[in-house]
Length: 356
Image 1 (cartoon, rainbow, N blue to C red):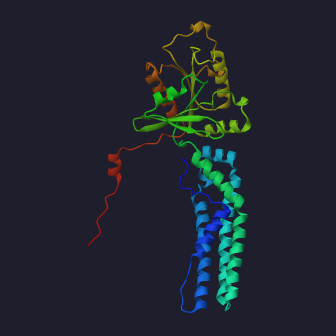
Image 2: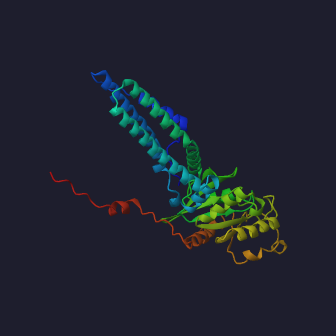
């Protein structure tokens, strides 16, 4: 899940304006006019330094550590923005903070030693200018961090630690309906990066175990060879999830794709995605070609489990769930165990009251 605590990234000039506007409201009183001016000048530079360092360090600290992102998000971030660029940009913001603090510190040191009101006024203006110059140098870095933030916040709410069933197949074969039928609750709809498509994300709960079910309209509906490089990499990023592919076949021909076309795509998906797979023949309650007239399955699909289902009547859905859960449980990432509330409460240690 993307970290929604990443703060909004300001433009360089916006940050400069905010820092200076806040500093210019600072006023320190002293009965001696000169000392009031000097104290105010010192406080203004403190304010500038604090505003810039606080805002930039918050961006650095709250941006997820790239190496700790799950592989799926890390690859999509690298594809969209570039992980090395993001690391360099965050380092640039850290550098800017240090430079701004040092510039203000030196300005304050000179102001403390001065006995000239004109020098103090000029030194504040000069320090403002040097700080602004440093902040403008990291304007490209701020733009990189903003692009990173936008991508991470826009990614679908997929849990990379949950075993995942990815439903593939031609358009109109019933993928979304199958996801809705398999899911315990209504699937959520989210956009998928680098495509104009949306995905439907549902969850299947079996006892205390939970699994994700994802419909991929527009993603696994044609061979990767027909995609551009960016689309291909974005789709392949799905392989970073602990995945079982559910390839949905419409043997009735009502989807607009022939069985031969669907089998051609099946062969391509098997070749492109090194993941366990189950085959599901949908619309089993509708008329279809006699078995002897159907084209043969691709050779690579010969040993895959096959389920006959009807979403409308519910025929075969129970068997499909059992087979799918068995395949998901065999993945190398274990399902997350969700203890019931009463077990959580029982596991919490009792807190002894403080002695009076």
